[in-house]
Length: 455
Image (cartoon, rainbow, N blue to C red; front, side, top):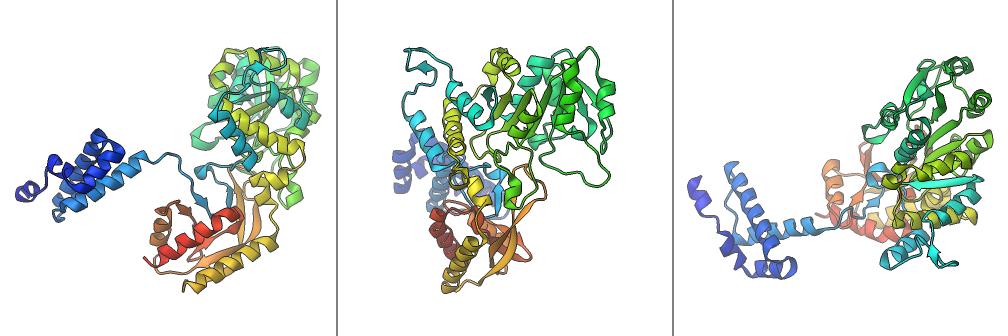
């Protein structure tokens, strides 16, 4: 083995290789040296495992792959052919063209982020987005922070620190990444008061827990799971009826933030922020990048007397949204204001996509793949909303099913494509769902399939 190691070229010798000189010109001397050392380290590990000593050409080639991997911007775009509309691992909601343009405009130059053009004086970064949120939802006031967990944390910190917050045991949920509602509440300084049981909580449970130290009643909507069977829960309107006579506000953590009625698309009705406000909730918190279809954000809307203190709280500065988020959110909310969200917001366009259109696209894909001698057929299937929204809810779709001997290897090769293609394996076949693939991505997707299948 020592003899094999001695046959490996030195870093200096590899640097003299013509292809290495090209890498130096592109990536710089120091980074290229690091990549060559990495290639040599990998070669030594391979030799220890019984591998051959690689040629200099192969080592420089490995360094080239490493350099490209190190310098590829992340996250990188992928084609989502899984049929999961709000795919958390793939970045959830894609933005509309108008929202992307708004981000580009805000990022590429200066903006009136905190400048009042009318007076020529300092303005407030939330002014425009607050106005849009109030117009769309009917709220008195609004605030945007970095995510929904931050929104709930800020609301509790501002209104319940050192005091009690009542919540049903059935709503002590865990959200993505292992974050739990009780832990978020504890960070706010609020004392958690659990009422009811896991599956049944009654009005009398809330009433019995009220006392002079009660700061709020919290409803945490179970966005990512559903309880069925012998269950009882108290509506948001009833919570308001319980708290209002004692001056106890209701904070509603909705999570998904559906501004359109999901029931109109054949799905279970998802509670809407507008409904919570109409029922009398003091504060309503929800996400920007789920069913709203915008950027990652935590949105707080509600009664002015409860929203305004949040803006002055020290945590608001730590949690505030940046200009790119606000630009994208503003453009997305404008779609709702103009009543064009179903057409312009990608999430809603996917949800509302007619089956006939999906079938047409699937048949076209299958026909082109068969012309390339790939076994492809169109089959019925189900798309998923995903993203911690509407658990268990699916939409009928048409899939392009690909048959091959090694499905896992095929899926892996697709993931190595540029851009990567993410598919799913179902019933012994690799399937592609047109619902989550933009029409502009079709040509790239089919080319990737054809190139992958002939490898």
